[in-house]
Image (cartoon, rainbow, N blue to C red; front, top):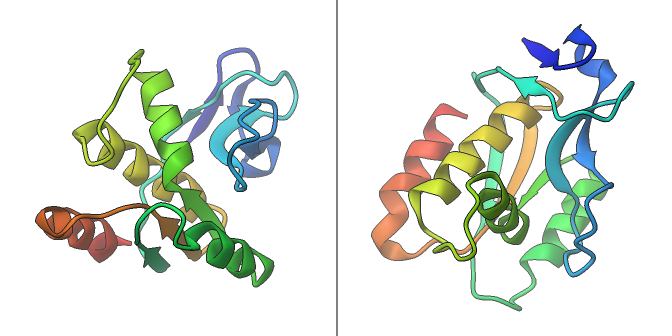
Length: 144
């Protein structure tokens, strides 16, 4: 279910899932930040991913994750960019600093997968995953 605080219940076509109104030009890929197409309010999004193809790309900063994800978006994938996830998790949780493998980050990744899965079954996730967190990544990918 998708609801807007101003317009009420919305159909998925009434939601802009990638928010171009937030200016984070340092990142190549758009933010998954659903807003109402009618009034531009942030929507309340309740949907759970029940399947699909989620491709995870991991690696160090500057290794080309965003370039590869950009090519995949040209092939119909929807992207979740780890840098954007960090910025959104900081904003949503009113934090100045956040660790890239914190619970806030993983919660945001799951939320973004849930949002995008309503629109597509092809998602590419790019983020730095360290070996200690491989079980968390597997848990994320297993349900999607």
